Image (cartoon, rainbow over all chains, first blue to last red; front, side):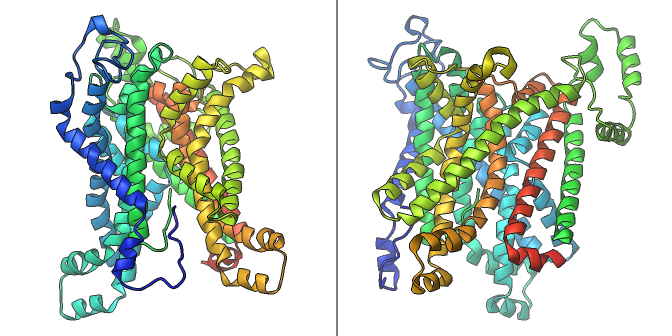
Length: 289
Length: 319
């Protein structure tokens, strides 16, 4: 599934290439789209407010009025899972956006100014990559009172160096191309060359990396929330919900199972989508952790 | 090779030193007055001022940093504020228990991951390969903390085979109970990583099998098994070394989560405890230990990679 079958005598042109788009990509894309829709429509379609207590209906098993059951305060688990969807999506896409916005220009600059400046940036990147992601996250979050947006920023910062390194390596290759030479000869500015000539051609590997990062960002962010260093109660972030379900795991496993399954489905879908993008954009499937 | 080793070693020292500055700098920003935390809420302002003077908390930050850094070099990691005990024994004891967890996990990941990857590549397109590839998608996407919850529900709550949480020392209640407490945490740790390693091994093995020298070996009429073992495997497993080093970083994150879920008294749980209780010396020392171990693991991977890859051994080592 991860491999495009190296079909004998594949035809040139885009039509067969499109036809070879893996089925998983369509499935993944559809599921991600459904999650985005649910996240947007959550407040209107949720059967209950996500934080409404109902002490008469504590630990109600799934079924009846509460499709996914209720938690220790009688809150509707389905409504809480729906209300948690935006947080996970924000975590994945928000943190990745931060690492893109800061990491890509840094990588471009490091490729263009190859003197002391570029060297400094790359050594800093090397050091930051030498730190386990969770430690960097913990270090950033240890200083402040935890909150959802701080986790997003922390995860975004954690992934800046990887974005910088990839952008730089792509840009270095492109800088040797003739069209860059031509732009230089025309007397274009560094900013023009980097953002108008290099960047548009550097996107494919960056997009591939981005799709990977979204998954890792959601995993890291929800793990931090699970550890109590992210979203805080009563927010219904999925990692936090799973952490909160632990004391009731034997009597009401659905409290943790529902958000956990939602998280898994979202992550698998994003993976499928990313895998498809990778096959489509990067025939070498560069794989990284 | 010696030059290369020295170069990598120097790099480790630099990384650990930079991390020490980062860790110290950032944790100094932590809210909470250390003297106040030690003396408690009934302390008078004079008592707090006196203790601050004794601890040197009024010194400039670089003096404090230097004192802290020199102390660590001498094996003095400071005093835990909340537990009122020296940090050193505390973190090394916890580290030993975490190391057991991590060492078992990474060995399983390396062995099972590469074996499954090679199996997939050599049985490409067959049923077992398809099932494994599908399983990888699933296993990579499931967060450790959810695996942990699932494992507890299934094996501890429903089946009652294994203890859900906790830890018993090996001397206290025998090997059996010690192992029983390790099974679920280790199983939780390895699921995602095995999928990761086997997937990368598979693609690396497939790439190797397509290369010209394998074709040559085939053309010479060498037996299939010999080609795999002597020609393809050594090259195909090279990238796996790098992947394993990266996975140690992911594994550290997993250990923090798993120790928290399974109430396993390791370094990860101690770090979270230190953050929650604003125990700065404990946090600083614990983070330094994790950073150092990770840097050394990366060094080990680099050297192993160089040792088995002649291109690095003879090529880049000079530079």
